[in-house]
Image (cartoon, rainbow, N blue to C red; front, side, top):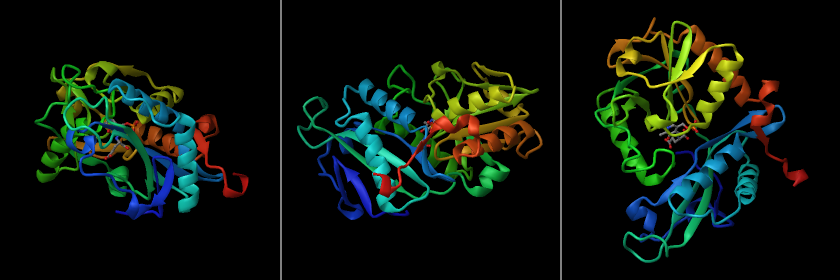
Length: 310
Ligand code: PPE
């Protein structure tokens, strides 16, 4: 992977290779951590973090659902990230905050373990490939169902919960696909291993609702707004598996994946087998928003102060 000079760990800036924890860290054994995936983009006014406050709020929400309080304030996370981007000299990068139960008593009750925090940044290219973003990717429906609220918390971006995505990702990769789509416990379309999903049919856009086991994606929210601002009808409703194959267009959204079209599902071509016109239109405006070229979405960008001003 691409590295950086510094990582922020529990309030200190430490060298990348020194950012270490004890092997008896609670989260390493039981998955008791919560994290975020954020991106900063190069804009005309310098690096800008996309919907930074929304991501930090979701980090706090994820922690709350697992009985953790953020060990630093939201403002401290924000400043730490700004300083990391500046001091590592990045124009654009991926940002990964993690809050976890640290070294302390072993056993399942984590409440006496310290809550620790870190933020790392590194340069991370297109998650599903530049080609994938341009031409679309191939996915299959996973044999694993998306975690349900019966046993875990889809709304929390919790480390241990990602074993579900990891299994689906391994399965789809070994079978020769770029991504997997998971159904929820009732067999309805939920999401990708790290992306929300949208279906276009006869000019109308559909996406699964909050109750379909999804992570409440920040790019999902952005693309819903962009689609509506462009004048499209967008409906949040349950989606049947067959609607993926029968759609005119399907696309995925996520911080890492940005907006990536799907061109095949389960070896069935979607629409014309190339990204469709509605996908293209939303992708273009979304890309403009990310890079600070869309004035109407300027408030989504958290500009990183240049060092001389800090
Ligand atoms: N669902 C899941 C399960 C998910 O992990 C993500 C983000 C999303 C939906 C989209 O959420 P948002 O980024 O707020 O629009 N996945 C992150 C982790 C990817 C990884 O491999 O790690 C990401 O995109 O950063």
